[in-house]
Amino acid sequence: MKILSPIDKADEAPLLTEAGADELYGGYVSRRWQKKFSLMGSPNHRYFPNAQVNTLSELKKIIRSAHAGGARFFLAMNAPYYTRGQYALLFEDAEDALSAGADAVIAADMGLILRLKDKFPKLELHLSTLGAVFNSMTPKFFEKIGVSRFVLPRELTAHEGAEVIKNNPGCRFDAFIFIGKCPNVESFCGFTHNNPGLVWPCEEEYEITASQGDSRAGSIIAAQAAWSRVNRRAACGLCAVKRLLDAGVYSLKIVGRGGPAAMKAGAVRAVKEALSLARAGSEKELTDFARKNYRGTFGADCSPYVCYFPGDFQTCHSEAAAEESAF
Image (cartoon, rainbow, N blue to C red; front, side, top):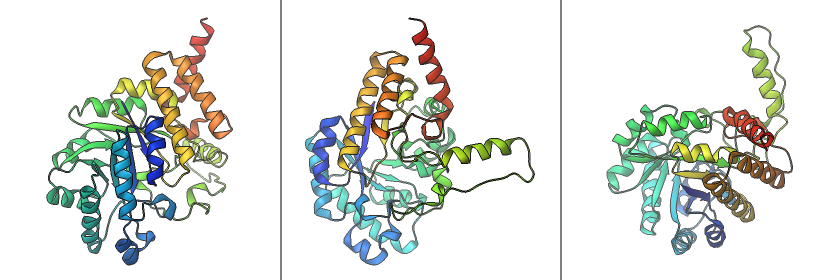
């Protein structure tokens, strides 16, 4: 199982590979793209400058540093869609990155995927979480048009992810594991997160009341209220690493483009330790580490609302408690 980390600057590469990252991914916005479309038309689903590689020379340095540290580099071109007039520049930017040694492209837009595969037949293509792999048929469809690797949605449980993986033995799958979550389904969300200093719509505090409806209204209201009390940037799925390993997940993906280098490196070290415990230790050791690391990283106790696998949250914690009481 690999560890996939975000990267924004070349000087982060040694920190991340030394911490244990096997793969790195980042977004590149060329000067020609910025001049014509600005960051509001970002090609990689990030809309603020510190989440971008802004020059080709910096991109080349990142790729060289990644390879020197034994890691691969993936270019994120994962906006949900593009206008017809944007494809020409997308190809130019992709060609720059591939000429510099980028190992794969992460994409979401069907038009881009088809055009990239036509223009670069040997290109390794990954489907972004925006591609909405919620069932076993989705990878089968995209595999036919040249996609070989898939990022599982945050909304799937470890068991559901395992079913998708089992039914697609020729494909590789990534699962999110640390930093950043959302109350919305990302592949269906139309919000633009264009400024990290703003309060985004998914973070607004507001009150819901039920004027009519069935018994689900109460749980929906409770969930919204709980989301308003947690920090969506403080997400974790370390407790589920053993389940993901057993499920056949190929790589654990860390969120954090635009974040501080120390945060990225700390996340990589935490995932590496969790993976080590998953391979050799008990559920209790893994859960104890995950809880301790969560408190140390985010200054709070973990919550199912910022758990990457909330369907497994109670199971993980109950099993650890049962194992502890057995001694």
